[in-house]
Amino acid sequence: MMKILFLFFYNFFENFFYLKKIEKFLRNNILFKKPIIFDVGSHKGKMAKLFKSIYTNASIYCFEPNKKLQKYYKNNRKNISFFNYAVGNKTEYKSIYLSQLDLTSTFSKINEQSLYLKIKNFIIGKSKTSFSKKVKVVTLNSFCKSKKINKIDFLKIDVEGFEYMVLLGSKNIIKNVKYIMIEIQKNDMYTNYSKNKIENFLKKNKFKLIKKFKFPFMFFQDCIYKRY
Image 1 (tube, one colour):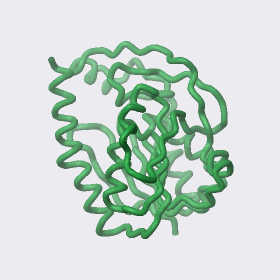
Image 2: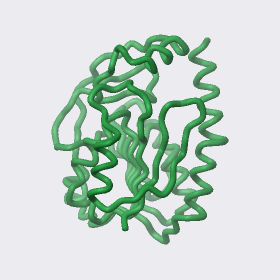
Image 3: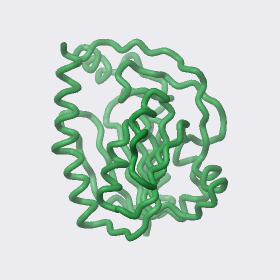
């Protein structure tokens, strides 16, 4: 029952508050005519649909390793491409933790002593996690090279603690990325997670923070960076 209530309120705040704030900011501040957009960790495609509603001529590439979520892309709009694999720091096959709550499936190792994790488990119940079959992982560099893509106008990354690894695999194409929206964790749920490493990487590659979006009652935020 608690899990059902949690998902109801989570989806309510996401659909009618959080995504609306992001949409308003993008419409008013980031203008494109025919952008190339990458949605890394696209889940059920909500952000992809939002991007398409704003940038009608966009080419959107969605990456989601959880094969069960592929059904949400069957009736996608024109120029939204779905790829059933993950993005990381090297090309490989890697096992992923699949959670009963598909929002939290991750490559990252869980910190079992995390206070945030204990609170989450108390509210929605402890998820039984298991290794899936190994999934295909590509780097942004290798994918862009294979598809002959030489720029990314907007790169969105939401991969539950694996964001730094995605960035490491973008060392060449990152020079031709205009904007990055990345989820920043403000909890201790993942071991070896480092907000500082992410921020240092972005700073080194000439990205500056221009906007933060804090999700209500949750310990994470999406941050948009612009390359100067």
